[in-house]
Length: 264
Image (cartoon, rainbow, N blue to C red; front, side):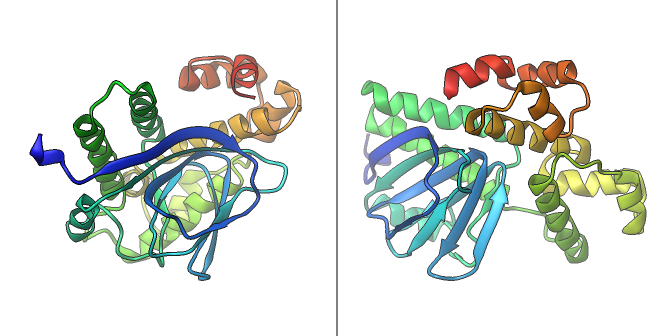
């Protein structure tokens, strides 16, 4: 089919990386997705970003990248690398970022994006999917990432900065207690309007975002350490190990113990 010509998928995979720092100028374009765990990123020797949770960035042969995880911790990563003349159209039409000064893309619905990445990787590795189908699937992923970056133009700039800082704080320290009613009051917002704005900003209500960040940190600790599950529950903000296990299984489909045994 001529419509999908001009793209070649070079590689696609998922793994748990313990590499503290990788320095490279890539040969290909790529979607780099960290589903859980810490991520350090710097592009073209510029500002260094340090985040934890579900973030993506796009690699490019025109830029120099340094990225990795914290020493002694794992980062669950997935990547798809591609090349070809079709990429020029992606850049022209906004499917690839033009500004690498802010390279990180916060993924608002990480479980759905994880599922779509897994689908692509399985289709690629099977060898049974046509290049047309893989191109179509890749473009869906790129569109999804482009949509993540879109916050309504009338979204208050002041609150965007406040919510960025709050999200970073939650990602770094999800084990803490957050009184969102009090935070809303400090921003001179009603609790209802605060929840509405935060959901527009992050794709989740504040409490959902906190639970998501706690589970992300817990999954990372399960793979990176040998700590007992009861201790990991406490370290990630859960006062009850059984409640933690129930919520964890609801998200990942398996218990914390099975998750460790399966992916470690």
